Every structure is written in structure tokens, then in C-alpha cells.
Amino acid sequence: MPVNLQNPTTQVSEILPISGINIGVAAAEIKYQNRYDLCLITFDNASIGAVFTQNHFKAAPVQVCQQHLTKGKISGLLINSGCANAATGEEGIKDTLLTCKKLAKLLNCQAEQILPFSTGVILERLPIDKVNSGIDKAIDDLQSASQQSWLNAAKAIMTTDTVAKIYSDRNDIYTATGIAKGSGMIHPNMATMLSFIATDAKVNPELLQELTREIANETFNQITVDGDTSTNDSFVIIATNQVGDLITSKEHPDYSELHKLLLKITNSLAQSIIRDGEGATKLVTIKILGAKSTKDAKIIADSVALSPLVKTAFFAGDPNLGRILAAIGNAKIWDLEIEKISLAIGSSQANTKNIIVVEKGARAANYHQKSEIEVQKIMQAPEFILEINLNQGEAQTTIYTCDLSYDYVKINSDYRS
Image 1 (cartoon, rainbow, N blue to C red):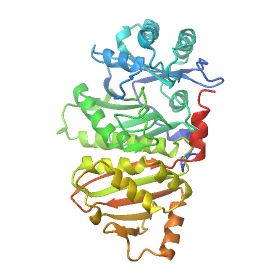
Image 2: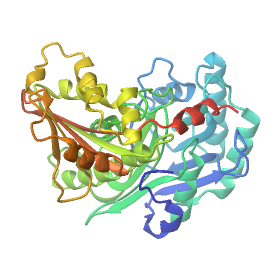
Image 3: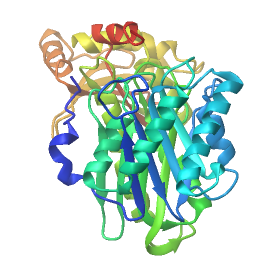
Image 4: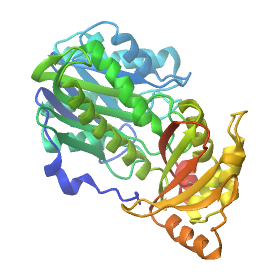
């Protein structure tokens, strides 16, 4: 069960259409039966920002996307689930290019104007006949993006996700809607999943690329489920250039409003990935304060968030503080002053006070059996906050992670069956 994450099927009215976007979906049966698994998103005269995985085993579609983005105008996205088309060599590249050519012919554009994306099992080639048949079906379904078509697109890109991930919002000027998929193989090293966001804003392409990278660093690069970065991670922002004045620099009066809107959309999608982490029962916010640098803060946060012992303690709701301190000490920071470190645990609910459990690198003077029972109750809730203050500087960071449950092992041991 996802952690406090509502199925968007029940709130389709909250999904906002974006002018200039067309969506079509199909059930191509690439791996899954009786569900959408292929999606087209098309547009005219849009600006594109995109960032991709830094895994050395970049999937064929990632390599093709990076090549096509150097060619100029992009007219559409082709996304399939069920097969990652990763570690498939030259054949994988050829397969990807064949699907781009197929779609380009139907859209009356060049193959270089198509960006392909895949997600699913690694080391398996695309079933070209099924993908091509799915493209035909998705073309027949292609229509101006509606609330339902956005939801269908969110469903089509799912793999081990238990719910579709979609979020919309607007401000006084712009509207934005985004979808994402991700549940396991989630760790910051660029984007950590697939996500596609569209806005009706007019944005210079170079500025949008810079904005996309910044937003990825602020949101998708601040989440981790299991420490594994996928071969297919991709994050794309599409600006359809329909509304407002053209934004060409960060000094433009509307830039900050666009940045805030896209940040809100992306942060909501990022947290939804953690809430739906494979087997997750807890959403844990880890705040690092008082670090000498942001880099040090992130190293500490990752060391804690990725420790299997810490994550299983989260699952049990067990305030096994020694595991957390050991994970802090395991971080590769050679000048860490452990005698300055404090630790507090608190509820995610507003207006609640954190309980200090460690101060000056040892058990806090007021942390006894009664307060440990209170901490245990906090940690047994679906969401809680772990605050680590290094007391060695001014830098800080916040990341979101989940626990490690029995179901994580079950899901991943059964993934190919």
C-alpha cells in the first residue's frame, strides 16, 4: 500500500489540460496484459528541457534521445513500459530508431524529431511488432490532452508502481501538469525515474534546459528508495509556448512564478515516488543541518537513507539510534566531529515538537524510557522526520526516503516472473 498516496482515478477533475499537447495511448501487450503500456505525447513549436541517467549502461532510448536533442526541433515523445531496451547493444539502438521512424512517418516529421523512452526489464530487446502495432493504435487515440488522457498516460508508463503518479496546478499566469513513474531502482544521479511535465509557458529553450536541471537537483535528486540508479532515467519539461511573454532569462518578471509552479509539480511527483516505493510502509524525511558544505550534508543523508539496518529499523518503527549514528559515522567525511552531533525525531504533523534523542554525540540527558516510547509511537506512524544537526557549519539538505520491508524483497525477486 502506498504511504498516504491517493489513487488519482478518484480525482480526475483535478487534472488540468495543457494547451498545445496531444496524447494517445495503447495496450500493446509488450509485457503486461489488459492495460495501457504505450504512450504518445505530441506538440508543435514547443521548447524542451531534458536530463538523463548517469548510469554507464545508458539504455538505447536514452542514447537516441541525447542524439536527437542535438538536432533541433522535437515534435513528440514515444514512451513504452514493459521493456527497458537497455544493455541491448547496437540492435537496441536500431530497434529504437525503427520505432522513431515509424512514428515520424505517421506524424509527418523527421525521425530525429522523436524522443523515445522505455522502462521495464533490462537486457531484453523491444518486441518491434508489438511496439509498431501499439504506435498505430496510439495514433488512432491521439487527441488534445484531456483530464482522462493525462491519466491514461500516467497509467501507461507504470511498471511496479501501484498507483499512477500525476499532479497538476496553476498560478495566475501558467498551468502545468506532470506524470511520473518510479517505485524501485530509485536513487539520485540525475533524475531517478521517468517523468514528463508540460506547461503552457513561453520559454527560451536554453533557459528551459537550465531550469530543468535545477529542478531535477532540487526534487528528483533528493529522493532515494534503494540506492540503485536506473539505466533509463529521464526527466523532460515541455513548454508549449502558448501563454504569456517569452521568458529568456531568470531576470524576467514571470520567471520566478514559473519556477515555483514547476518546482511544486516536480516535488509532488518526487514524493509520490517515495510514497509508492516498492514495499514501502513509511515516508521518512531526513533533514541534515549544520554541515560544513551541501556536499557533506548530502553524503551524510545518503549514508543514513541507504543503510539497510536503518531502513529496517524504520520499517519496525524501532528507535534503534545506534544504527543511525553508525550510518552517520560510515559517511566518507574525514573531518566529522562526532562530539558535536545531535539527533531529533519528530512527527510530520504540523505544530509538533521534535524529541531530542542524541546531543553532543551521545544519548541526550532527557532521553529515557518514557521518551523512547514516545519516539517509538512517532516512528510507527506512516510519516516522520529524522533531523540530524552536525553543528559544524551553515549548510543543509533534505531528502526523502522510505523503509525496507519484506515486500521489497518479494517484489524484486518476482519481478521477471
